[in-house]
Image 1 (cartoon, rainbow, N blue to C red):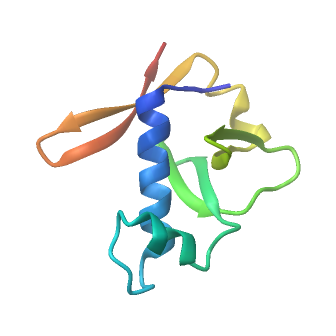
Image 2 (cartoon, rainbow, N blue to C red):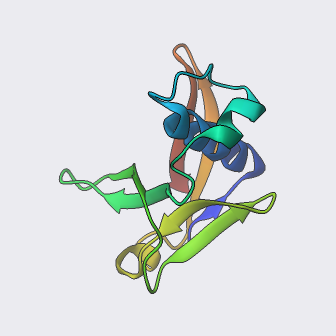
Length: 107
């Protein structure tokens, strides 16, 4: 199973809150606004992309999913088809010229 660093968990939480607030009319980053958003059952899912990489989509939990949680919040779903493929990988967060970005690299 993929490991997620503390910084990676915090960034997943931020990304999820921003996605949940898109279109709701709230300012992003405000905890009170995030709590009022209506997509509460949706969380981020790690997926295999067509080019052989990994990506994130918003989805609901399914049978067999592994769930990465932080501070009592489910943040990331990994389907059974990817659990073995992401073994030995680490998700982290890095500062880039364009801001913070999630990264996935070998451990």
